[in-house]
Structure formats: structure tokens, C-alpha cells
Length: 193
Image: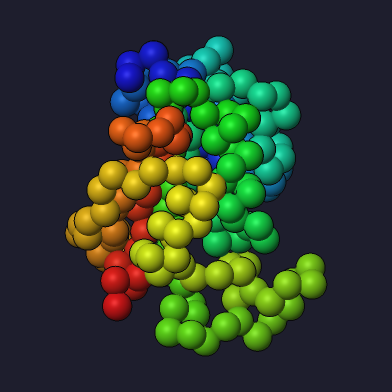
């Protein structure tokens, strides 16, 4: 939607944000990340790209927005594998931030322990791999978590992307039998083994 309100959780230094803001000149963009340095870098680059910091851009340091505003599109780029309680986390996002007709685009990378080899390092009390991942999803386990969170899956397919190899894409939306929030998912090709 041309005038969509977009929430980008884990926006980092704005890799996706800049593309969206450039291509979709009427969106309102809210980027959230725990990395304050990355957000500062994003904010420093905005005037270079747009001449000033556009009024339609809000950047916030944290894990989720502090307000309970509703968004038409929520981007969850390579975040869910870091979250200790992914089902309740996703439920909270859908309940607190997703507009009734909204969509979520969720991506998760090729995990380092896809073949059943869990990480050996502890970080903040949890076993994590070298990238901080708590889990590596299979296509099936990701669908299970999304359904458990209240999402309805409409489509799941494998696609080829230019960076990072194959990816699986699932469109998760309102079930005709219920009013579950819509979620779109892209997951790495390793999950198709």
C-alpha cells in the first residue's frame, strides 16, 4: 500500500529501510533495533540520501516500539531465531502492533545447527551459536510456531534469491474460518533438506 505504516524490527543500519523509503515515497517508517550505533549510522545517512531526515521516519532503540501503534506492514528480518520465547513474542507483536488487515514479513537465516547440532556456547544463560541464534528453524517448525502464535498460513513455496541462495516463502494470512493475523514468511533454503 502506498501510504502504509511500516514497522521494521531489527532494522540495524537501515539496509531495508533505505530501499523502502526510496521506492515507497509515501510510507511512514518506524525502525527499531537494540544496536544504538547502527541506528545512529542510519540516522546520519538519512540526510545524505534524502537531503534531511524525512518527517515520516522514526528510529527507536529497543526490542519493540514503546507505543502500541498499529502497522500495516511489520518486518521481522532474521530476528525470531534470537528470541527465547518465539510464540509468545510473535503473539504479542500481532496483538499489539499489527493492524487488522496488516501483514508481517518474517525472515530467518540458514541456521548453523540445521542438522541437529546444537550450539555449544552459552550467552546470557542460553545455548547459542556464534551468531547468537537460539534455534534453527525447519520450514515445518516455523509453521508450527506461527500457527501456535495465531497466524494462518496460506502459501509455502521455495524460491531462488540472488543473495544467500535459495529461500522458502510462505504467505500466512487470515484463514477464511477465523480472523487470524496475516504473516508473510521467507526462510533460508537449508530448511528444505
